[in-house]
Image 1 (tube, helix red, strand yellow):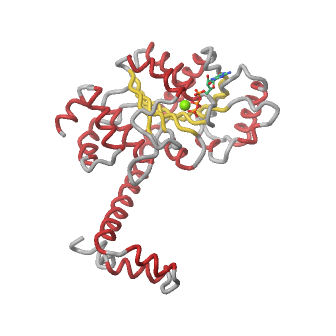
Image 2 (cartoon, rainbow, N blue to C red; image 1 turned 45 degrees about the vertical axis):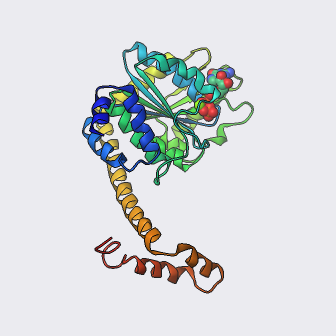
Image 3 (cartoon, rainbow, N blue to C red; image 1 turned 30 degrees about the vertical axis):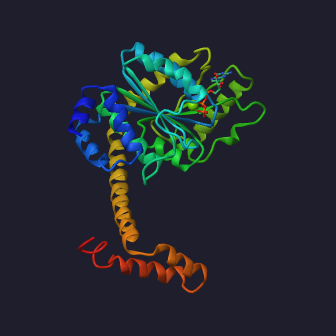
Amino acid sequence: MQQLVTELLQGNRRAAARLISQIENDDPQKTDLLKEIYPHTGRAYVIGITGAPGSGKSSLVDCLLQQMRSDGLTVGVIAVDPTSPFSGGAILGDRIRMQDHALDPGVFIRSMGTRGSLGGLSRATGETIQVLDAYGKNLVLVETVGVGQSEIDIVKAADTTLVVLTPAGGDSVQTIKAGIMEIADIFVINKCDLPGSDRTAAEVNMMIDMKNGESWRPPVISTNAVSNIGIDQLWAALLEHRGYMEKSGRLLETRRQRVRRELTEQVEYLVKKRIWDRVKEKIEFNDMVEKIVQHQQDPYSTAHELLEKIKFYNGIVGEDG
Ligand SMILES: Nc1nc2c(ncn2[C@@H]2O[C@H](COP(=O)(O)OP(=O)(O)OP(=O)(O)O)[C@@H](O)[C@H]2O)c(=O)[nH]1
Ligand SMILES: [Mg+2]
């Protein structure tokens, strides 16, 4: 295990891949590995990219990779696909383009599906970011489909968040979900070659002006990720936001809040795990379920009874637990 960590810190690609697999598989050694690498993290800058399915996130990542690499930065990419049960590099059509960069030793790309740890996908993603950070990548890009709360959670791991929208055609941008306005540091109107793009940009700008009272006003950048248009401006906006985060002290504050959240989650995870491990050991859980289904017992007293049985009430899960 120590060997694997040493190799990771030396920038060994296979070590990175193996560690990420262990995270995905919730390997029992995982926590020890994460403990080892933690002192070597905190250097990578994390960029989250979210947007509706097919909005062009992967294509944008592909364009950005070229910019980042020509600036001499190394990059890790995590493509989170919450709909996919596969992991470990499920290759979808759109990813094949990105795989061109896979030959570049300065780029590391990984897809993640829903399989994985008790804390779910966002937990595994956060841990994978740590591995890529310790591996020495300057930037970590996290692509995630913006559909539900868990995807918004994943973006909370980012220092800068891009929200990708596409021209609304005849419709107005009423489709921007609650929560999305709050997380966007930069708006991208991708597919600006399609009709309605200027109008969509104008509407998003109006929405920002209505809501935004912060010292950072999210810019709205129009891009065409197929023809590499607007990518310079997007990269400039990313650098500007990073500069703002660093100089204003926001970066430190964001990371402090993240640690607060992660520590809370870690405690909750350990407590839950301890309880359910104990339940598996001691309780005929299905019998309890059956009795409740048959209305011989109620779920409220049964919950207490269960906790009683695992000695939850004498200190969490009992002295011996
Ligand atoms: N016309 C046009 N098509 C684009 C543009 N950017 C991406 N596309 C196309 O849109 C489709 C989806 O692009 P992706 O980059 O795979 O989008 P995505 O958001 O990563 O998709 P998922 O990961 O499946 O959610 C592909 O066929 C792209 O070629 C653009 O700027 N203009
Ligand atoms: Mg994609």
